[in-house]
Image (cartoon, rainbow, N blue to C red):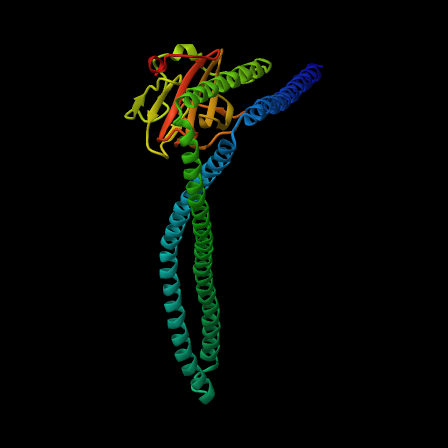
Length: 376
């Protein structure tokens, strides 16, 4: 009776654990589905605002946007191809190192097989002569034949070892050749991308000259900066409203407000900082290609080209806080992605018609610019 009660209890416990497991899996699937739906909703809301901003661009600005986005993509592709080339070269080096002991073993097996063949030939000839002239007794003939059989078996074993060593060397050689072929294709692709990039850079130079000639008109320049700032403010407001309608499934570990004075600099700390009069935020003067990193964890809510700010990434940190990274050469994160402190967001450039290489950076609270240097 006691055993029956124990069995029932075990069955009930197992059933309870199983149901909890299925419920947990169902909750996880629901959470992932909800997160995906939120991402699509966010992207849709942002895309609507971007389309409105696109209509405000001049012909030159529209062309500049397209060419700078393309330059950013090609720059990123070249970087990926270079990294792949380095990895392939290391792989080829490793395979060559792995081939050396295999070649040594192959030569060893070859020498053993050759030695065995000579010995087998010599002994075999002697035994055949003895048998032919019947100079040995029957017992000796039997032993001789048995030894011949042993030599033949030994020959097969040595030949198999030699063949196996040869196969290993040839397999490594094939792997090396495959890696070299891939590397050759990558280098050809890199050369083609460089050619396209150089054409785009030349086109961009002409577009910037056309835009710069208009900016020499002080009134036009002032109005443009005001219009660009207004567009950015409207975009941030739109983003804030869009985010406010989405429940956060993942929240930063530490509240952003508590990180004041402890935030990671978006670029190397040695870079000089400029504070332009006509824009909010600051500019970190840095060479093109310098890594731009997230100052804290959050979600990317904008990653696109914006008039006056070039290739721009905006990260939402919760509670109304956002960080802005503009003028980039190329972007490495997409809308809806979650990032952690120190994650690579972009590389420094001079997009948007800034005229010099550097990172435009700002921290906003409910759309209002904050004193950036006090937060870093």
